[in-house]
Image (cartoon, rainbow, N blue to C red; front, top):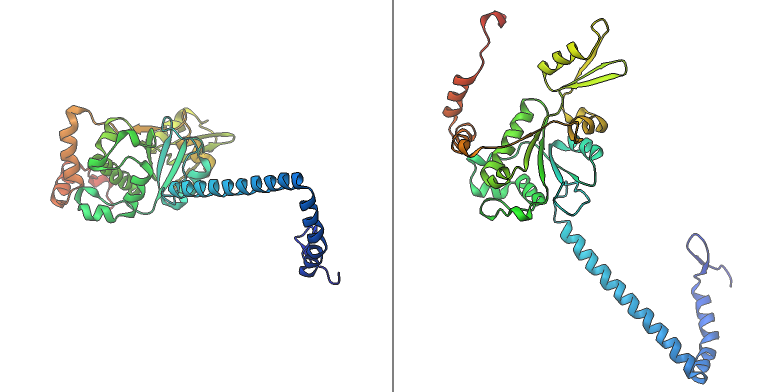
Length: 312
């Protein structure tokens, strides 16, 4: 065969069209004669061919079923990094702000039982939003889809996909606002989720304190000062760094301080029955559409700076 063509990198199969024609012409007549003269062998060969064909059809059908199942699974939000376990018992969903923090959380999580859902920006304030606005919110749609339990009158506790829902935001004013908006959403649209004890708020560290091989993390200024007095030598320098956000933390740091059971600090959102009415009023006043009520709350509860702290 002149200028032969071979198939693939291993060159283990001749792919020249002319060669195929030569082989077919040479073998076809002899093979047909053999099958005619040996009907028993022909029946065995035919049975083998039919079995292989049925296997191919079966595999194709199984692939199609598998693909359809995968499509159904992909109805979960695209940004959700789900956990591998199938049961909700012990499963945790971390709701984080932004893709940066989401990336660190995804690397630091326990893939078996910890899922990560990054949210871009601030979620809709449902306390003063119409039903139409809520239906148009992609963030709310993603969150409800990830939880799997529906919301409002359609809420079904049995369909909740996680045992713990953990709000994990930056330790700053914006992070606190995002956490407040999320708690408001759950309070207004999934109150039973709170009553059953599923909602938590993670407490990430604000400071990292290091002295030689010794490292501690502080939740706030008061905790930082306490650690400086109790855990470090007074005559040696302590390196103090302040985290600007969760996205600035290394995955290992985020895991150790905020995600690892036994080392992390979680605040469970719990509303006693006797405080339910007062809580409803507080949510309405602070998150509702009447700014004068928020202004009144600030006037009554703000800690104003004295003249000695002002540079006048």
